[in-house]
Length: 343
Image (tube, rainbow, N blue to C red):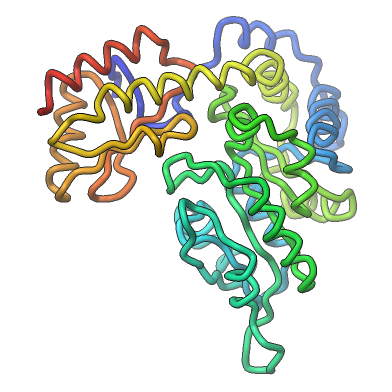
């Protein structure tokens, strides 16, 4: 697939020439022996950004989330999350397979849960119930269309959960977008969760890599589990260097992606073939909602034929995601194409 404009996801970005040069110069060592200086420095850097004791570089965000679930739970326990959460919706049943836990998905509002809702879902102590052990939050919320979880609500859920003896994990695959859009310090997000997962290969534009952050003791266990799951790599300083470069050069510019998404949604808000609401565009995703399944599938095919690759967020919704490789001029061209194709 080689579309002119790829709006399927912010994971499709390619390393810039400057990032590639930076990667080539990376000082490397064997990370299985904990001897790669570049990844060691990156782990310390990102942990400090979120106010955490330690960080563990991993290949993917799914692995980072699943390591967190594994270190927080025992088989037969239960975790709570929003019904559209990535760990429940897009990670292939991994909590059951890897950790032996069941997931109770709670219906939130734009991806957000409230403290009372979480407390009501905690199981009573009777022997015939599973033990509720972990609450998982996701910010920004992918399935909800890149929506932001208000920090006050997250903190309220965290405080309630901890008061009930539960651990809290934050899937922050796109926490960078939330930080840039809201101005909430990364350390404030870090403080509300026992563990945090962050991703470098989405809006930041690195080719691969995520990181699990948390207390050193938990990260020691996660390190062992990473090896079990096949995530122990060798000279990964080359990959860590890409993440390091992205933090230096691509973090602030996430605001451009948000602006392009808003521009796209605003220009198309009067269309009758589909519905898009600019007020719902909080970061880099735009949802085009069609009246029927076939309408959405046909629309995605028409867009692809015109050179714009998109994805289906659900059977009725075409999703467009703006990222490092889509400029303001590209966005304007996409607007022109969609305007010509649809009423």
